[in-house]
Length: 224
Image (tube, rainbow, N blue to C red; front, side, top):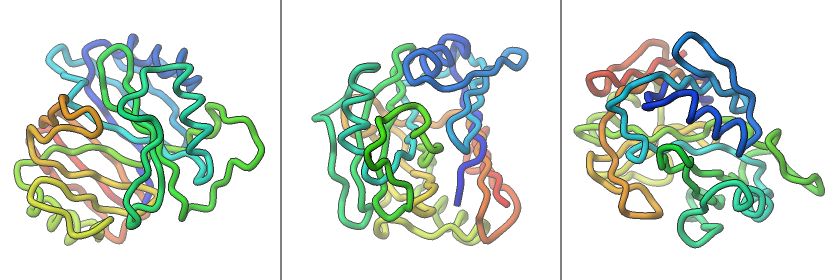
């Protein structure tokens, strides 16, 4: 499953897009009041919302499976790294991550190296071209088990990394995940940034179903 398009509300799209352009080296396009950031195979569309709270949001970006240490060194020169640097994920997730924040709003961002994917860095120097696509979108929902069941029945998304809990579950696969969390559950690794429902629009491809689900008022997941 791939995450093709994410529409994310932020107070100032131009300022947030400038971080992605200037710090991470990504290509930015202006579109009316919004800005579109090319994150590998994903289009991240930043739309204006003065009430948006970026620190309650979470996105992860896939990097090559052997690029964890290089990704940490690269991002530490460009942004504030959160937590203890490179974090080894559980065996069922089979990878490692570095967490950092976007300077304008404090969104918890993550570079994740999934070892089961074929992409490899090898001896190349790490750069923006190795930000392969958005691999995780955090989706706060009123009832995690209900949202997980609806996405399984409608889009054919399977649980990832275990059965989950009433407060946390991931659905999808190594290439793309929706991370379902209960409101107010803090995002890892800082534990001081609570997840809260927001207006969010996510488009998926490579699923076993076709259609769309409204998970919260304003939170739409489309799949094909």
